[in-house]
Amino acid sequence: MALNLDRLLRPSLRGKEAPAYPSPPGGFLHLEANTNLFGAHPAARRALAASARTGFNQYPTEHSDALRSALADFHNVEPGQLLIGNGSDEVIDLLTKAYVAPGARVAFPAPSFVMYRFYAGVNLGKPTPVPLAEDWGLHARALAAARAPLTLVASPNNPTGNAFPERELLRLVRAARGIVAVDEAYAAFAGQDLTRHVRRHPNLIVLRTFSKSHGLAGLRVGYALGGPAAMERLYRAKAPYNVSAASEAVAVEALADGAFVDRTVEAVRRERPRLVAGLTRLGFRPYPSDANFVLVECPIAPRPIVEGLRRREILVREFPGEPRLARCIRVTVGPASVTRRFLAALREAALEAAWPTR
Image (tube, rainbow, N blue to C red; front, side, top):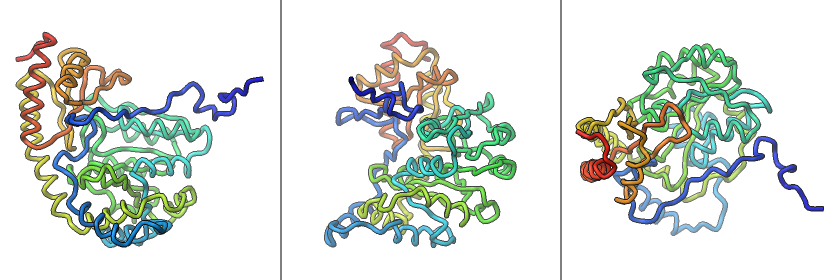
């Protein structure tokens, strides 16, 4: 009798496919991933060279102690209020493992970061999307009314790009009956920072990452910051040695050198309006953005334009599974040279597809 492996699986995984983020051929311009198009933090080269001299034959510290200490000084909190993750994705996974019992709700705005739904479902929770307003505004009252033990909110939101007002986020934190995790992956571009509120709100946990403004997406370093009680419980779900010694060393060095982040943020803020203006001239509708990317509504379904851009070795993100985003693409903001190349290719692809451009 053949073994039925599907019967051995968790019910939440039966009939599902593994999430896919395929790597395209080399040489493509990546405007689909919201990564830093201004380069990697120069701290990476320095820290990796120094770490290689000391060797990697030993395990890193259990909880990335050097980085926790550096971040504690940076945020003026205690090291125990910080948890370092293999990217902020791992922190989201840990939040659902620690705070979501089987069948319990995980609330999040919709549309938002796709991995919220993924981790909620994989960890036996009940994904509970709460639609954003027509202008992509946050329905804090509706999110709180879900009475979820865990609510996940990205600000600026991915993929819409808008930051939610601090007063709305804190209204949600005060009204929620569970943990509210505010994902600030793109907060540097918006000038937003809720980390200073964790002392007054024991159910608030703020997520940060080194992937975006620090330009270190390939090293996978993120972290959570919250009150001591909430973080102590989160640690109960965390495995030791989850971040490599090399990644930790680079993150410590990058944190000490804020000039690169400042330059990146300023460059994005300078170039974003130029990208928006160029898109508008071509007849597209870019939505207001506080992040390093722009959500763009297309005149018609975007598949022909996505394919045309790919033929020109440019990748953008589309959203075939999101009805409200069926005519949208998402484009990362980069240097002026990237903007010029993208807009020229977009115009060619639109003409090729007989799109109604201006």
